Image (cartoon, rainbow, N blue to C red; front, top):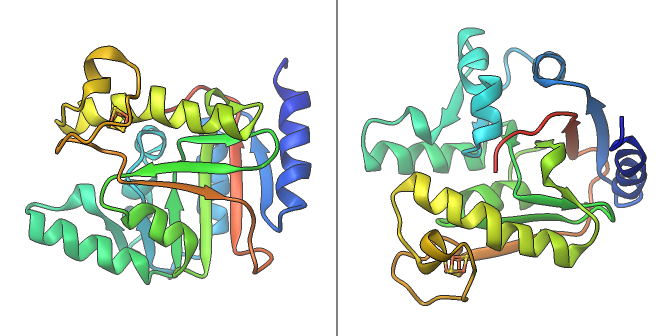
Length: 206
Ligand code: SF4
């Protein structure tokens, strides 16, 4: 497949940053890897992600009977906040991401910050799941992807209306509807094995 050379380069660059990485051909194979990696008794926090929704990660883990802290399961803002807090101290945290550079930078924009907080510290195990559509050559490309593609589409989905929703272009707005309150670049990990990236050979999420 045409993206394999870039994926091989990415996996090597992530491992040089103390981040484990592996490749799954499709979402079925990816879900099987996720279920095999996470012990059935572990608590799991979930970072809201269209990629994880497409794989039915939260639902499948919950069906195994383990605690799953996914804010999209909440029935009220208070419950959503509680689930986000619990996810920060879960055994595992599973998340999508906005972009990954071939050099190994993992780039995320966040609104309330719970997703990037858990990626950085808290859960002992972090699994980041990413489709090939989010792999880009450089850090600048990854930041541009997060701002120009992920942010407007996530804003629209969440019911916010910053300027980029109409224009598709980031103007570094000061809108009260701004969704990108944090821009986080993960450059590497201090603890080997804490973070693993699972690259899927399908287009997933935005
Ligand atoms: S800063 Fe504003 S315009 Fe730029 S991506 Fe974020 S919400 Fe959109």
